[in-house]
Image 1: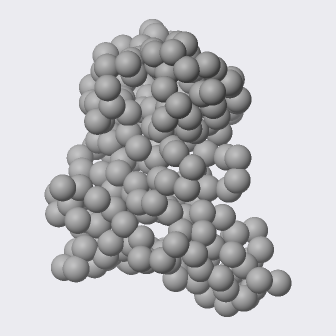
Image 2: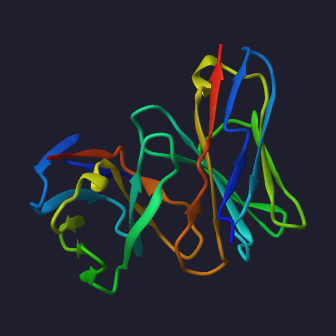
Length: 112
Length: 112
C-alpha cells in the first residue's frame, strides 16, 4: 500500500552545520514530492518540491534529492539556523491535484 | 494577499456533537483539500473539493462531509463526534494542475 516514512524521529544538529533529513516512500506511481516544515501551532509550510523526472533540485539553502531506484528522498539544509528548528514532513502524490500522502515527520533541533 | 485562512482556530466539543470548520483558500486557488493531523503524526487526507464537488476522498467515515461554495471556500462537517476525532484539521488550497498546495494554520478540535 501507499506509505511515506521517515527513518529517524528526531535530529539534533549544531548551528551552522548541514542537516540531512531522509525519507522513504513506497508508491512507485508517485510523481511529485514535497518537503514541508511545520512549526508549533502552524500549518505545514512548503519548502521545496521535486518531480519524478528530476533527481536534484536546489533552493535557497535547501536541496532535495530523489532516488527513484530505491524510492528515497532527502532534504539537505545548508548552514542550519535556529529558525530551522521544526518538524519536517516529506509528502508524495501521484498525478496533478491528487492527495498528498505524508510521513510521520521528523523533529529538527538546532543547538546554539 | 491573504493565504489560506481557517476558522475557528480552536474548538472544544462534546462527544456526540456536530462541528463545522471553515476554510477560505488562497486568492486564485480553486481546489480545497482537508487533512486531519493527530498529535505527533503527519496529516491524513480526508477529501478534496473542486468545482463544488468532492473529487477525491481518503479513508474517513461518512461522518466526515464537506462542501465547497461558488467562491471556492469550503466547510468540513463532522457528525457524532468521537474522542478520537480530536486533532488539528488542516485546509490546503491549490490551483488545478500540478503545483504546490498551501496550508492554513489549522483548527485545533478537542472532543471531550
